[in-house]
Length: 125
Image (cartoon, rainbow, N blue to C red; front, side, top):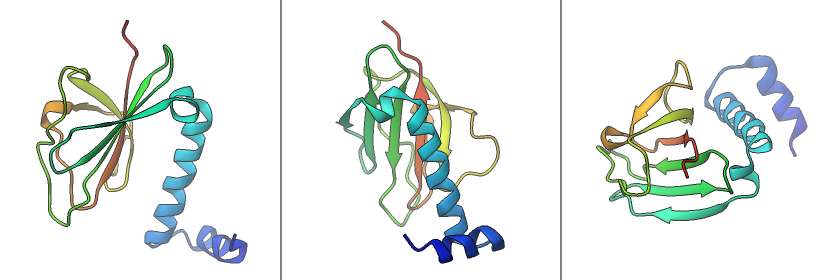
């Protein structure tokens, strides 16, 4: 681990490397507190031009990771409506700033080039 480089990033707090470090930290904290992310199974879902993975464990919240691997905007993303609720909560994003707990309409989800979002929604029996 390049500790000296990480220390310099923490001190400067600017640039894209700092943003990646902060995103990794936030994901680590989230993963430690959510069983679906730490223990759950992963299921790849059809998503048109995007990549979508559903994480779930027992009766815990579900997590949906959606990635746009293209260098152009994508949307709306075609997700399987039968497996997902109409809305989910934005937990993390590689591109979006502002509150990370806003509601997202899954049928209208659009992604910027190379964007990734982590969404959650409650378990429903």
